[in-house]
Length: 178
Image 1 (cartoon, rainbow, N blue to C red):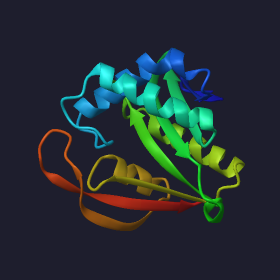
Image 2 (cartoon, rainbow, N blue to C red):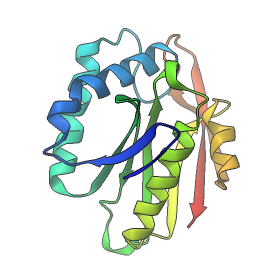
Image 3 (tube, rainbow, N blue to C red):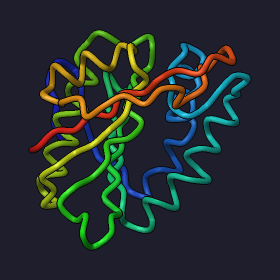
Image 4 (cartoon, rainbow, N blue to C red):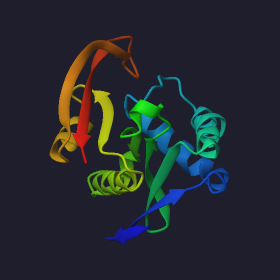
């Protein structure tokens, strides 16, 4: 657990997650409604957000191949990020950063940076030396990742559907040696 500026970053286990599903579902729902390209499109309800955590992430946590972090500010859950380290034997040196989400009302306060620093620390602790991630090209997260030392491996056109419209958007694949 790390904390300063009223931000606390902590890891959630499979036992912890059920009590936090409503909070995490609300963050995911708010981000999707704000246009975040995180795998979902409108319409997207609070029940959809909760189902993502309950029906998918909980099983991954139980299987042991996922690290789930949350950020809290003044007692409120305001952000989250995941580290998928369930890799094949020839990939044990790398992991994928997934679903960096900060509630739209809590952005621009260093929460994403704190979550990324802690997920990188956890990856190193697992013996990982390479992190990968993807983000919709041109999203606000792209300069964040570049500022944190991630490098662009390439861009894929028409990779994802826009959250609100039928437009197909490119994605940027990034990596960082840690």
